[in-house]
Image 1: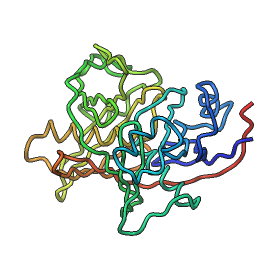
Image 2: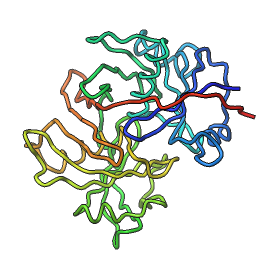
Image 3: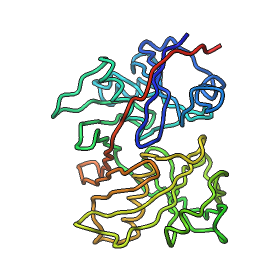
Length: 290
């Protein structure tokens, strides 16, 4: 039997399994079964709580920041490995604190290793704030075809540690009318795939110095989710890019599962993007992996 906890960030939900010393080997089938909403616990992904020193991927995290004791081993619902998850990091830290595995001073931060690098997490007014790090335009701007739109729409490729394609729509009606039961077709398709965000700016776009948008997302290896933290970040970056130099650096992004905050900050190594929002633990139990 394996102990687990179910958690989520704005409806983006996870099976969380503590394996501090890296003793538990979960294969693709086991992860997919645990995340299955009919035959398993049900989740958009799985977070394995493991010390960075206990797995090979953790070496790079410790080299980057020796205080990154914990590594977020994140898997998509289909069992595939993913680089990062913005909502997952908040749920991961919330679990660490609630379980007594780590502490976070009110004015301090905690470093979490991920396959996209170390992420610093602090408390925020609405829960936790994650420094997603620097970002870049990927240069891969495919056309996106999706059920509910009569013609393909251009997308903007953005890399925030994992790949995204952001597609602008004309109205709330277009956004609500999308059928994301099947994944969008990207032409050309990125080699590693991509999460695809569909976004509609609010009217007005900026209110009291804060940009506002609505978003729906199809996550690779998962499907449509109620929220995607890195997708929210990519969406805010894309809309700011389209809006031009006068656009704000503070954004509120509405997803089906709630609202998340995004802030851009210029630092010595480039512009960092910070994601803030809540994290909750829902229930705990045990499950037989056999």
